[in-house]
Figure (cartoon, rainbow, N blue to C red):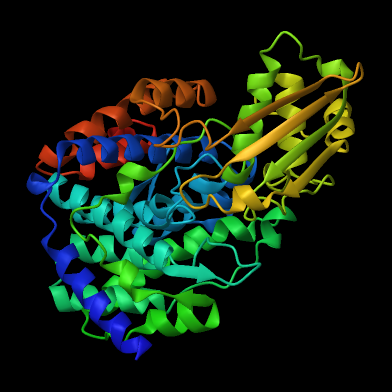
Length: 451
């Protein structure tokens, strides 16, 4: 029965994806798509500057091809671009996310869609429709899936989004598109959350796998090798957790989840952001004294209460440590891609951060990811601040295009022109006759020099 419901819902999604028409999409949704695309391109380019990412590109030995390694100055094969861009996108925990999907819909689908669109030299309208399809399908699968305790959301429920976007670019029929989505739902990765807290970069590779699996599923459907059998009810709903197929079609075509996401201003897991925001608010008060802090108590919801580690060994594990994030924010006023990992003062303060779950905050999920912070000072003063969501959430101090542009240029000072190019592309995308040349420019070097 559950597979039958998943089959019907997936078929409805396939029909919707194959018919998405950007001329009928609300202008506000297209504006949000432009902003998400800007964020994806900019954050990917920042990730491409990391020494480990550059080393990975070298080790990959990708052949030349039609698709850009964003910000890395190379054109490579479609599959290599999809995988490597996806890893770069999530490597600094700066990528856009969605609290209702419980993860990162854009990161699951955009790298595959952009790489394939560059290969196909797709129209702007088809590319915009494919990106929207990738986001909305991934988000709906995220809503529908409740992962088992300990499972990380990367590479699991979002894979069908990548397949949906690629199927849309390939112009597949409704039935074939549904089969691509269904196939992708059977290619989920069972990643454990502790890989992130332990600093294992395999966590980033799960997004590369999502991009590649989405491409593979769409190609299987194009070849007539894919079927729609309600796979999600088994893979996501039995092996990895539980699955509510009704979420796949609720308000389909009228509710746009892409308009309900969040952008990041801290280089850390989103569960740590409200705590950092609260500390920064307190830091601006006249009573706050960084050198007088005796203890910081952070009350979080169930999802964020486990990020209590104080023994981070690299940037990834630090980004999943609330004590690191809170101590860094308190002492330096920011949590940036280049924030110091081995500052002895940060480590000392982090050991005085206590993270606990508060039942009343858990009860406010998913609409709010609230956090309360108490900073205790050596003169007996206790400073308290509660925030309902991270700054940058669509529901709480949303970031505008100038905000996102400012952050990206701060984090990527060596390539401001690439950030501007991405902003222009986002707005012009639906009207472009072909996107290949514009996408290849995102490699960060003049296309003529790359060929």
